[in-house]
Amino acid sequence: MASNTPGNEVQLGAQGRLVIPAALRKALHLQQGDRLVARKVGDSLVLERREAIEKRLQERFRHIPKDVSLVDELIAERRAEAAGEMEEE
Image (cartoon, rainbow, N blue to C red; front, side, top):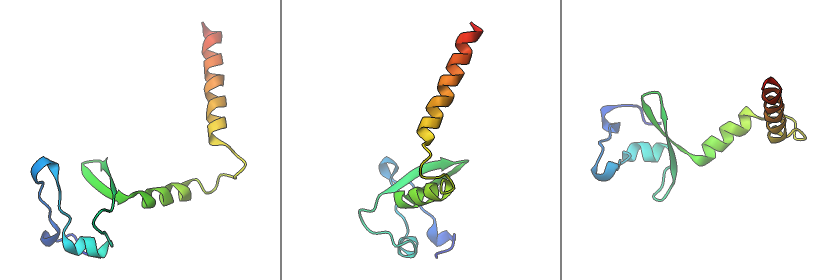
């Protein structure tokens, strides 16, 4: 993969446009029309493919059994919190 050298430096252009240097596009197999997700991490800008984000999230939650619904658990938790708040009033 291309290293972080001055040749990989980019300059912000008109309307906030960036041109990714050819060496990086080649190393990352980026093609014209590819869509990247931009996000702020600390003081950095990170660009990554949606597929990479999805894969990372799938890995993160892989340990959860398929028959467990995190949505149902969250709703139950919120209902319990709301019930506790109602009792306090």
